[in-house]
Image: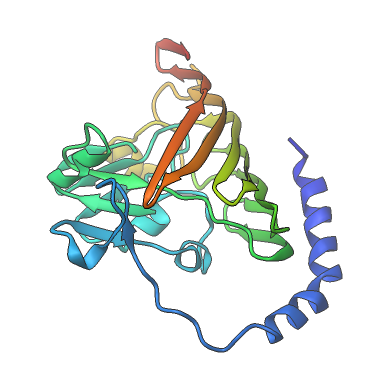
Length: 289
């Protein structure tokens, strides 16, 4: 992964050099915008969400990005009724997500028993879809700075050449943290390439990678500790250097072909490699898949 300084320099250079080009492109966009449409495909037959007896919510890419740090899923899930995402601002711990009382680890949300159409998810399902590139080529740099040493630097490249549709994003996130021993660093890369082989078939390649070399865990505080010094780490956090590291890579390929009127065949293959090291108080957990 590129260093944060290199990503910052690249993002600022691209932002300045493409500012006028982006403005010209926006001026040429049509004024009318088609209404959003939610389509459900889990039933094996695409249907409008209003025609199905299920609770469905959809969050579009504008809602995901505008005013958001784009680091935690909890930023966007707060707008979905019935979904509670507890973010403790501790990157060594996973988000706690519940759907009407059901725990979930899985932005398209379906609540209730109909989520079993996606698998063994009785409480609900959260499904993320990667955007397709627009015609031409677009480069979108982003630089975000915040309090407690928060910074996120990234660049997205997307486009469509008729034969190839692509979208790739690389970002680097770092935070010092409000409390002592709560710093974290995470680099991500996501990409999707879709080829139109002929009028009836498409081939899609996807690759995602996450590198979180360290995420300090400050542990919890007692009422007395919080009242005395709320920024201090918990008992034994420094002694055992409690922390977590994650390295994950996931490639995938999907082949789609029309085989008749209204019928489409799909072939999907993917692989996943995860390496997690979680150092807790008085114990060491290692897991490798």
